[in-house]
Length: 293
Image (cartoon, rainbow, N blue to C red; front, side):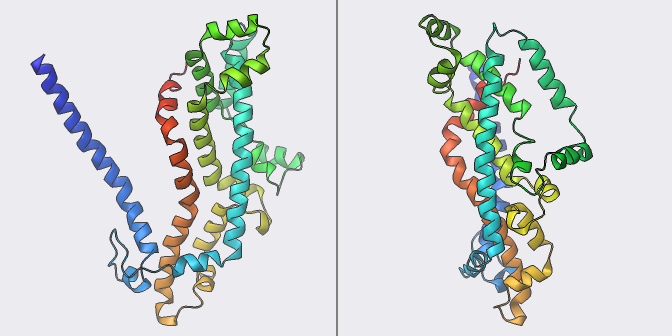
């Protein structure tokens, strides 16, 4: 017993050191970006900024909020993310719940079809032509409908319903006259807040970071997502120079560097704000829904 206790202590110490190391690898670059975005251009261009701002300065953020193109992209991304996540959750639940019911006829066949589609996805060109024929190009639905359901997330939700919702409770509800709609809305969903929070985070992050689909399917500047707008700005020296036009010529290059850092932080704020609200459910939902059978 004593030897086992010592081995446990060694494991905890090694695990703590490893996790601390992983945390530093992730956190330090983020702190550097945030500090650089809040520092003076001269301090950034000289490499004096580490993990704390040098000469606190928010001019870069003021210039971002005065850029109509960025604000439009921000608004579009929020709309696409909210609408897309709602569609994803509805479709995922409507697919996962029937497949979790043991007496559902054809359950294994439908599950096999879902897995087949997940493995053998359609190539880019047929997908583009399909969206074009459906007249979805240059619209929000081109980003929402093609990915309305993730098979991987659906399997996680199905497994959660199977393992975490007592079958006896569902049988009792059916004996009392409840149909599947009432069971789903009044019993299953209230007991599934953990996995729903995980799915919301997964889908929201996917929509918010979506770049390629928006780049392919959207053509109007007023409909671009934030990621496309950021790409256009970061790859265009002229766009950055226009944003830094108020700066003196001698420090314009340094101002552009600060703007780049500020734009990165600006695009990450919504996910940073969202995570604390779902964090308490996140670990539980991931662990319970991680067994896929």
